[in-house]
Length: 178
Ligand SMILES: [Zn+2]
Image 1 (tube, rainbow, N blue to C red):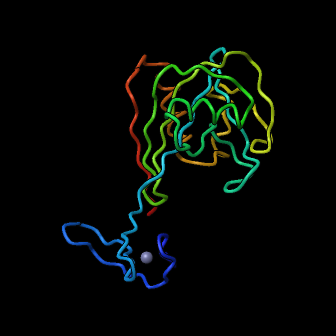
Image 2: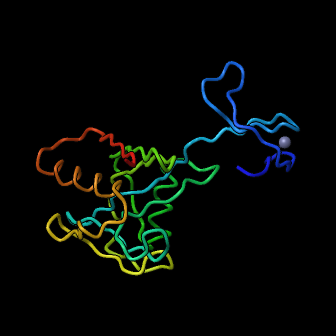
């Protein structure tokens, strides 16, 4: 952190505030404490006739690799609204949520993924600025070696396992860079 977000001062120090348990960037001018908390990423496993829809990323990071439609939650929306919105923005597809499927902690990126199971309302999807290619996949045809993020791989592997076992519990996963 280079500047105080409150007063613009560059005079910051990293220390543990009284009564706290962790170092924070604190402005020596206005005393503002800069708390850094994880961001929430919302998205879906969109399903159509037993297949899942994934999209090839048209933006960095991981340009050209495949991913479930997911993105940062916006302020003043619910996680459910965000998940539906992200699918529509990235693929033009309208979905109806079934239930929460995956909670995935991406510790080093300070992100938490909330991925829902969702039924596509129709077979319609279209490429967008964010997605250069979109398709429906079975477990056998998912491009497993060309996936952008471990969160999607984790969710999809569990989804296909659930189809075999009938498991309907929420899956919790964590990835931490070694
Ligand atoms: Zn300040």
